[in-house]
Amino acid sequence: MGSNYFQLPFLLYFLDSDRLGLWYVLMSLSAISSLITFGFTPSFSRSVAYCWSGAKSLSKEGKEKEMLSDGEIDYHLLVNVFSACKVVYFFMAVIATFFLVTFGTIYISIIAGNIMCINIKAGWCIFLIAVFINIYYGYYSALLIGSGGVKENGQAIVIANIARLFLLAILLSTGFDFLGVCISYFVYGFLLRVVCKFFLDKRFAIKRLVKDQNISISKKDVICCLETLWPNAWRDGMVSVSDYVSTQAGTLICSAFMSLEQTATYSILSQVAVAVAKVSRSIDVAHLPVIQSAYVNDDKTKLKKTQAMCVAGYIIVFIIGTVGTVFIGLPIIHVLKPEILLDIYLFLGLAIYQFIISLRNCYSSYLSSTNRLWYWKSYIFASGLCLVLELLLFNQTRLGGYVIVISSIVSEAVYNIWHWPKLVNRELNMDIHDYWTGMGDFIRMLLGR
Image (cartoon, rainbow, N blue to C red):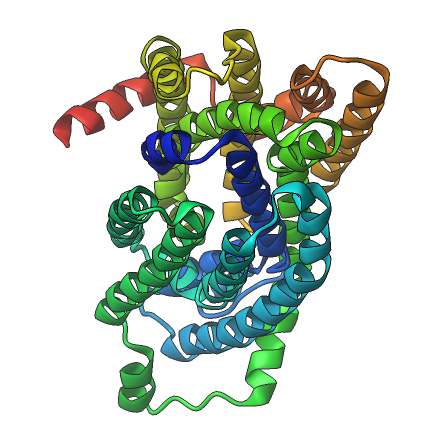
């Protein structure tokens, strides 16, 4: 999750500011294309976790009595979810790629017309292929995480990132420039899916499972599964749109109001803040299958203990990561790219915002793990308010990247940052004492590793 840190030295040293800004724009476009999966990734992961925990049926919201586990895996239901997952991801990949080929190409031509060359055009083509592969075969990661393979999914990410970094260094040092960055991105996505498939097959090989269990899945079964998943899938999709506006859209908005060089400066600080937040939330993300399993088995004690540890661990790691970035990370970036002016106050503003949004997500992920996506409306409202504030402030002021910080913090402070933590704390009967206990549990677990 900290791969952005390790890529930065190569990107800063070998790419000029315009190409660096363009690359971050491509990353934002890639995030847009991922939205087209429209929430099915968390829905499928959640459904596989329920199946793996012994659920006998799936519910549109919450859980039904017959969903309770008897300890035995319903392989027919599991294979049904896998079949539906595969169909959905193929169509989503086609739609996403079509979107980028049409609207994405036009947008890139507009903002990068003055630096457009064969190297960038070839890189764009490689990038399009990479997006298709990443989305279509993304179901391997979803199924792997849902089946409890959080460790294996992390190993796959590490393997793919190491390969990407080595390839990125080789290609950039041999003069591939922007094209080299796109090729390394393609290899990363392809290798990630291959390794995830390898680990998934070790847990349960679908083809062998179908043969051994004599399972037959009809078109009607797949459609029925999709009908069950759709009510929460589209809500997950709305949340994904909200998260995109709250995090990635800032780069695209900056590129519309500022130069590519200024966009690169903002994007570097933003990506570093996002990396700190992702690393900090890794404890929470890793324990989502634990929460989902405890929910299916109605283990309220484990739910409470796990949630408290995840939130406490998130806060500890985020503080350490932010302090380390200020005193170590940013000075290193300055040495690598002296001409880029790194505003430490802008970074701290972005860090505060990332802390707020990720803390909010620690609680909303608990609700989604229990199949209740009540928060989607308030997320959409907050992202809409954020977008309106950003456009108004960019047009009326010259605050630059601070516009994103101000708009984001204000939009979240209105409701999300206090309401959902309050709701979850009340439901689990948690207070400050539970979080202190959770902090101790996190430290003991960390030292034990």
